[in-house]
Length: 309
Image (cartoon, rainbow, N blue to C red; front, side, top):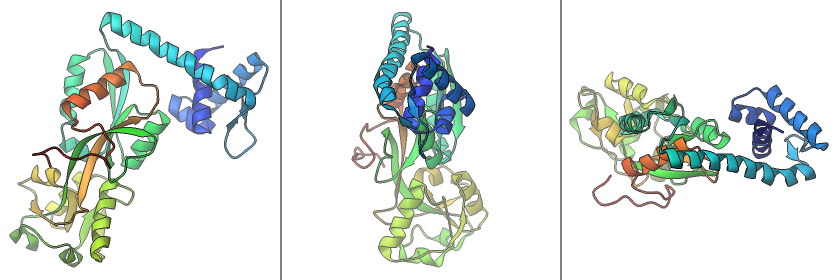
């Protein structure tokens, strides 16, 4: 019996899929299947029922699963003990991020963390909130900076690191560059550029338009807010972006306020709820709490402290 066989069994049981489990543990699907078959032969019983649309535990598999988790937790305990005695955090940690977080303090966090923990190998990846949430749930990414709206994604714990207004952004020669703000009703008169459907920021802006009974024309969508900013700077239209993101580009963009209680967007650090975390991942979350966070509650429960956006 090998530790990797127990790890694969837990992954398949939690994902209900050999394919998703293989992606989670970074091996091929045939490898996962073969190793679990070997474990089943050694134990003399089938652990998984492969006959349905999803993979399910057999009765024996359900009995084995908590013991497999306990063994893996014990291995984590060994690593924690070594870390406690040596005082050195080591190992890999994977950090994912939506593009808009690059305007925040994420690079500063990564640089400071690397300086304090030189034995930790940090891998960075970028994606949409939907992609990152799936990756964190599946265990492919340890921690991710995601966009959040009124609710936190199911199955994840979150630490809010930003909550700010969404505003319009236009070029300095755009007709709206002569104004500091417009009403929600006026938004209908101007072509918009937005993040795609499925993102938390797009959901917030769509809620603002729906509440006002307007149907603005979305002329362009892009998953990277930097692309929207570049297009707005070229006069293509008005981009809807986080205020901090727009104000950080005064030479390129003119900010346009759009008063609406719905036009708020947030960023949160997210990790798998109740899941096993490596010492390196725990250290990263702990540093983020100190360096970035001002709330450890889900996004729909937090209140910004005085003086913060």
